[in-house]
Length: 158
Image (tube, rainbow, N blue to C red; front, side, top):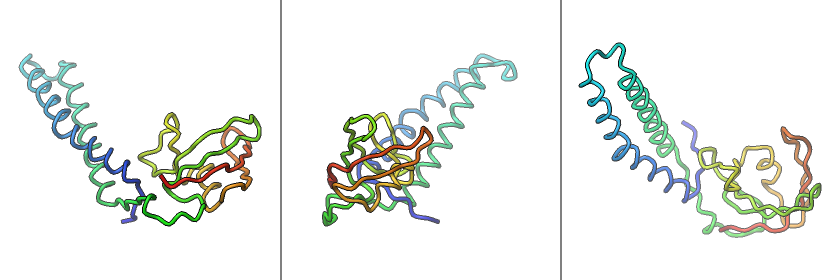
C-alpha cells in the first residue's frame, strides 16, 4: 500500500467530507429509499432507483476517503526547514513569460487538486517541472495546451 502525500488542510477537508457523508448524506438517502419503498412497486419506481444509485455513490466515496486517510502521509510544510526550493505543499509565485501574468500555485496531493483554487497536483506537468527548483529559476513546461515558460518569483512554505 503506497503512502499518499497530503497537506494538513487536505486531510482536514477529507475528514470533514467523510463526517458529512456519514452523518448527513447517508441518513438522507436512507430516508429517501424508505419513502420511495412506501410508494409500492419497486421495478418501476424511479425515485427508489435514483436513491439507491445515490446511496452507492455515497458508499463508494466513503470507502475511497477511508482508504486515502489510511494511506495519508501528512506533510506540514510550515515545519520543514525552508531552503527556498519548491517541494510538495509549497506555495509558488510564478510569472508566465508568454503572457506576463503572475500566478500563485500550491502543490498538493491528487485528491486536493483544484485548478479553480490554484491547487495543482504535484505530479501534474507544471508540478513536476517546479519540484526542486528555486526562486529566480526559469521553468519550461510541456502541457496539454502547449509549451509554457515560467519564472519562479517566490517560494513560500505556508
